[in-house]
Image (cartoon, rainbow, N blue to C red):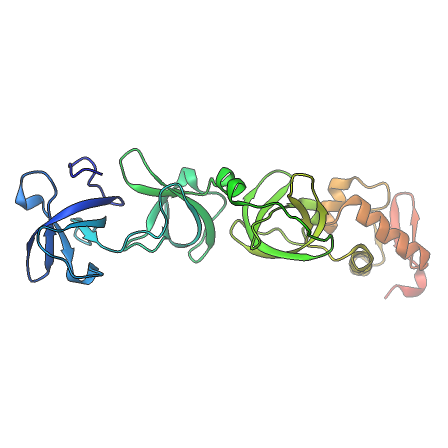
Length: 292
């Protein structure tokens, strides 16, 4: 990076020469030929001793008075890299994240996914925007794909943990601590996670491409018991009857019980075998002897 005025913008990294010192710290040559443009590197922002004439790699930001200022605390990420970082501020134009620099790095609204809050930890990529400033984006699919590894020797039924980095209409994508890419279908969610959330899930399928399908739900037998209890509770709350049965549309089942049509039918079948329910004309009823 050359010392010209166009590249010296807040949020960028530059190599600048120390030209003079003061009680506050040292001043760096802004390359304009005007000493009034020299950039202060305050003593508190120096991570090692500096000498006049030395060239330093610094991070540039605005101080509280709006002046361009330097710090030797450089972002821990390099341009093009991805990392999981913390959201430290939200504005109407975007958000700021902590990448280890003196100031947070800006993420424009266009680079955000989902509704973020301070304290969220999200996957981002560091890049330089059109004005020469460092910025981040949550569009990290290609980078995560390149950083991932195939799920070799992973057993169905085992648990994995990771964080959600993207959503589609079908479900959520998770990058696990083992660097696997996992897909969590909507039907396999007990509750809908947010982007950035940490989740622990169960492996249900290992795909040929090395990715895995996962579920928040327990194994089928346990799940059927839990789903059956949910249906029983629902019936009791409605006085022992409900307008839902084997013939109810899948989207209605999903909305009312947050389970798939298949899981709903399996749970009903379990309740039928136990002689706890009966169905008549599209309605499901608790057997009279167990109605509260």
